[in-house]
Amino acid sequence: MAVIGVFYVLGEILNSYIWEKPHTGVYLLGKYAQIKFREIQEREATEYIAQARRQFHFESNQRTCNMTVLSMLPALKEAIVTQLNSESLTTLLKSKPANKLEIWEDLKIISFTRTIVAVYSTCMLVVLLRVQLNIIGGYLYLDNSVGKSTTTLLAPPDVQQQYLSSIQHLLGDGIALTQKQKTVKSFVSLKETWSLLELEQQLNWIRAEVEASSRRSLSWYLLADDENVLADQACGLTDNDIMTIKLLNETRDMLDSPDFTTVLKACLNRGFSRLCDNLAEFFRPPPGDSAPSCGPDSLSAVSLPLAKIIPIINGQINTICSETPSHFVQELLMNDQVKEFAANVYETFSTPQELQK
Image (cartoon, rainbow, N blue to C red):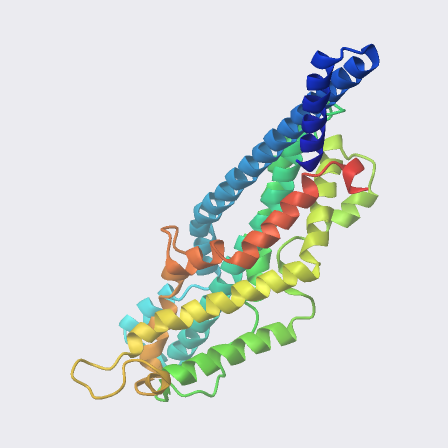
């Protein structure tokens, strides 16, 4: 704007001088200043419109991300429930079988496992889709840019579909792998009582065990690892296959970045914190009880036998994987670190390569 001001003032001075002393050289200089002033105005207006268009496209893309997450939660829930079916065990218990204690032990393991897996999987789904849809969003912005130098699309519709279908790995093998982690200590008695504080400590222990015992980073559960092998098999691959592999490898690079690890950890912290908030509703003292209902002391004020905690834990998947916006999912979608990370991914892939260089 300072440059425009200089040209504008210069033009005004020269114009007034021209009327008083219409020398040809000065007249041409004044016209030149006016032309330059208009060029700068037009260039800044064009840049402003392009930036506004880009921002609008980005914000629209984030709304698409949110809606996609919500639309996929029922499939995620179904996949978890199918692989960790506690309903069959509760049905067996109603028939009063002879091996009742053994079934309760299985129910204990499955209930905790599927709730832990639900937290991990939902957080992973949120962050993975943020990466994928912002990579696609960035390429779509470039494909539709005014003055694009080539007619070749960076993200044709068939490639988009093939690329985004890779999310099925998380809903299948990814869940199968994460649920293999042992969760509740087998020697914990069903008659043992836990306060909310002790339950939180148990959940923290489980999380530490899961993340410490994983041989690879958590990003390994998000995408199948065979795309690089396919990339080496040039024969038989179509142009769309090659473009899809390129997108998947770019995605894998993002998933292996420190920023992704930081954002996923922030989501997991928020997710487990929200889970504990949900569980706290079941540990409130009865009306008229003198026990504190809030504050640090309330975490140990009420204790429940593990046999009563199991059904509470078992039902948390209905809140965690709810397609109706819940506090759990909303807090993940609105997380500032997730938003900033999404903006950085979009910025990277919506910037022409010549500008990146």
